[in-house]
Amino acid sequence: MGVHNGSLVEGPRDNLEAPVLSQTQLDAFERDGYYVLEGAVDDETLDAICCEAAALAAYESAATQRRVWHERALFRRKAFRDLLDAAPLVAAAEALQGTDVQLLALDLLLVRNEDDGIGWHRDVQFVCNKTISINTGIYLQDLTDDVGPLRVLPGSHRREGAPPARGADPLDGEVTVYAKAGDAVFFDAALLHAGGRNRSGRDRLALFPYFGRYWVKRMDNYFTQPLPADLLHTSDPMKRQLLGLNLRPGVASYHGDGEGYNRSRGEEGIDFPTG
Image 1 (cartoon, helix red, strand yellow):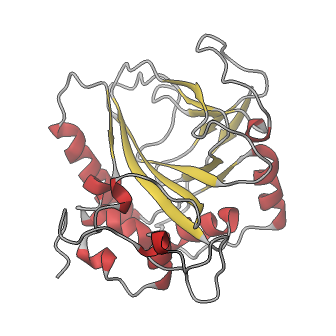
Image 2 (cartoon, rainbow, N blue to C red):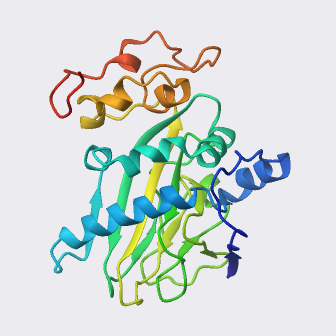
């Protein structure tokens, strides 16, 4: 069993430059199926997200052990919309996924104290020789043993086989990822991973942007209801691409930008004003 220790970023993380991933890092992601970006979110944005996430958790019943909020709720709050301005996060997603990267989902996960943890699983139930989509854990507190750190099985994104039984623990070759608050752990959606038991005495909260190729589309309300007005009408080319509105000029995708479903956002006014 291995360990991946995140390290604190020295000094404030405001105005972080977008990372340029080396070929060695890209090769390691292809081999292992995960990559840790330290300090992916600047301090101001991270603090605002933590505040909003804590408020959502506090509103939830104490009897609720686990809860997921999807982007329909999250994008009502500016702090979560500001995540799309996190240049290091977006640049790393583009480097790992491809120039036609798209944000397929944004989830906030609450895990209460003494929750049993999340067993070994894949986020997609098939394995292929290409990375089609990438999940990303942005942690709102340091992952220590008592919080319940992320565990991954390097290389499993390229190997067939069902996830092990919940009791099959630990696994040969697994790595424990001790990420810090504000770090982002990118992992191929086919990678076997698990979340440890939360024994910290407090809530564990993490934000999960899910990235995919532009031609991959979700069949749910994210693509049948409009976005908040400031996102729906943004002129920022990268944001428009991330939200599935338009590919950036010069960026190609499997279906290109001429397919109707790449542009359709459903009827305006169902959920958000678009004035």
